[in-house]
Amino acid sequence: MSQTSTLTAERTGAEQTHFDVLIVGAGISGIGAAYHLSQQMPGKSYTILETKDSFGGTWVTHTYPGVRSDSDLYTFGYRFKPWVGAPIATAEEILKYMGEVIEENHINDHIRYGHTITHCRWSSADNLWTVEAISKADGKTHFFTCNFLWMCQGYYNHDTPYTPDWPGMKDYKGRIVHPQTWPSDINLKGKKVVLIGSGATAATVVPAIADECGSLTLLQRSPTYFMPSANANELADRLREIGIDEPTIHRVVRQQINFDMETIIRRCRTEPEAVREELFAAAREYLGPDFDLSPHFTPSYRPWQQRVAFLPDGDLFRKIAEGKVAAVTDHIERFTENGILLKSGRELEADIVITATGFNLSVLGDIPFEIDDQPVDWSQTVTYRGMMFTGVPNMVWVFGYFRASWTLRVDLLADLVCRLLKRMDEKGAKRVEVQLRPEDRDMPLLPWIDADNFNPGYLQRGLHLMPKRGDKIEWQHNQDYWSDKDDLPKVDLDGSDFVYS
Image (tube, rainbow, N blue to C red; front, side, top):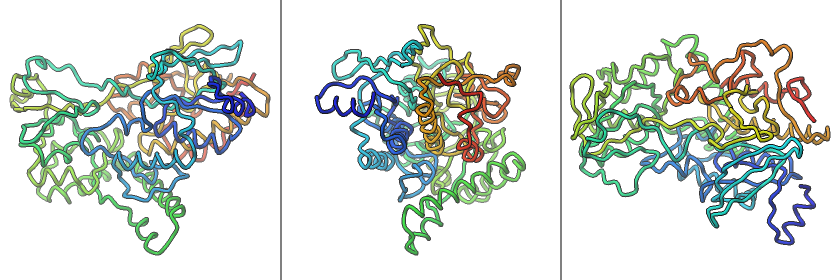
């Protein structure tokens, strides 16, 4: 729909159901996409469909104690909006930051809350997507059409977290809760609590509840690496002290953090043992020099083969050193009436068991997609740079980074999408899709990500649902921000991997 038609619809009060671009999700990705689209393509009409009653995505879904970022906000924040607080931020602080972006750029006028998408259909005859969504306000199905679909709904199921089905769970007389669906009525005061998990969520919840519980045990089936450090950035603090403006501080500190992270991740591949020892040395600064890191904090894999969890001010380690948290590394044999029986034969008594055991992967929001009345099986498509898929026109999925802040890719992909939309306009094209080039036809098709490169449990459980990757850089999500930042701006939109019509 043209800008003139948009204005006419607004003046008459008519409901606009067609948009140039439809963005799915008002989380960190969707709000970033909306900002870049409005700045780089101001003539395009757009709307955001959000299933929740508020913006924020993850930061609204997660309400467990201590919920905070696992990335520094100088890089998790957008490149266009300076971050001023401590590097690791609470959900409340992140939502405040996002709210400012929305207010400052009038994005809220474009968000339709309480709209749950139930179907997406592409018509080649019309070169349009039709998106069906049930409105919470009236319970009815509403239909939206758009020229381009920008999927920003994330990659995990917000409603149904992952909890293993351990034997004996029905026999257990206590309460089992998952952080992702944290109950408002839970009372931990004086209770014996066992938290199962070893990742970022466990590292967040444990120090937040340690002072309240009667006893608290961190039960790890597989240890993870932790990176403890002060929740401050010396460079940012020094630049503020000497009067440098916040936009410059934001730009310089982002550059510093990304440079340091690139160095660390490269070293994890080339000298993993040295990095392990550095992480262990940092842990001992909080746990004490005589603390035995084996087995509780000695993973079997190399650093960054799974995500390294940040500990602001070493909070988890400090609670362990203070004797308020007991670490146990073992496997679960079964639940009992009073707690958990471990493979070693030890039983952990618990009034409450918290299962910080991860989430379920969600591919494109688990929304049914159709192309010309044929259902889309994502596992039969091939990904183009982790953002587009063979056989699926006029659509991009924003999937961020695991080893760098998610939002770094939000900014990069937004630039590429806006370039693509401009190129379509210049060509007078109504449709664009990616295709394998002649030189790609015989390349091996592999799982979405190389397990030797990165292998968290949630990906391994859902990998069969994900699109395939090739063995060439164009046909994979390489998870490498440091190459993407140079490569994505140079993508040749007139190359033979793009087909316009």
